[in-house]
Image 1 (cartoon, rainbow, N blue to C red):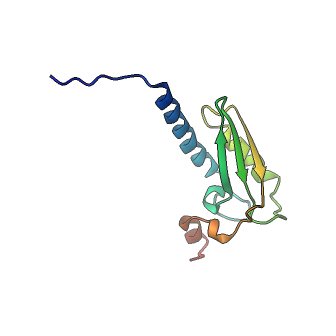
Image 2: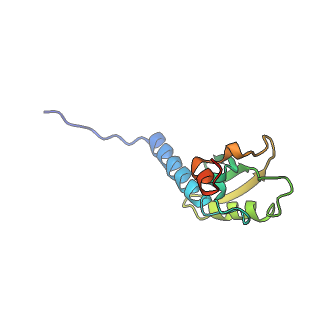
Image 3: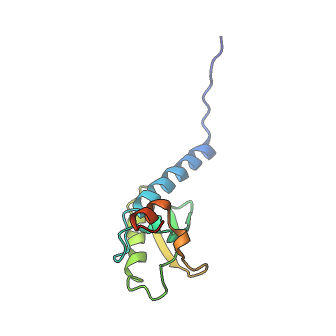
Length: 118
């Protein structure tokens, strides 16, 4: 008789939790829009990197479509607020960078389709 024995692996539990938080963060970021563009910031390619620490703090490295973006203050705040809606996230900080600068190549195919940029 073959019997499968289930073992409890804390490391895999932690990895699964990070995967869930990551997927939930992507969905949360997709609710944030640049006020001048009818595409969410995730599909625009404005999110460069997301780091999640063991205490649930999320550091988001992001950019804007232009250094003089009129929504330069509101978009990062909205990104932080969206991150805070995710279960397991205790705090969030959006950090703006222009290195590398954003280009239309950062956009997903979905965003290009919406904006008729193919």
